[in-house]
Length: 105
Ligand code: FES
Image (cartoon, rainbow, N blue to C red):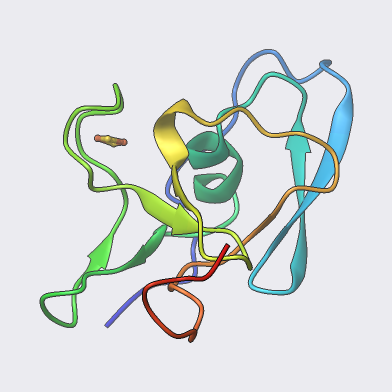
């Protein structure tokens, strides 16, 4: 079971410019300079579901080493949320898109 409550609370640097990204089709407010992980976890309790069971995953190392924070673009590219900076218009999914594999270029 997952919680929809946010995992992170923003306490400082609240004056950075606001930008908007889209997560699973829903707009999410972020601040310029946020990592994707910070942007998502200030709005949700997790980044994605585990591929090995029903558990929710929220990242672990926060330094691009553990591979626990994968998110996906609609084109099927994987992004490490902890080392991907947000940008205006970024669209991400919390589950891999349903598409044939291997992808065709
Ligand atoms: S949290 Fe470990 S790779 Fe992103």
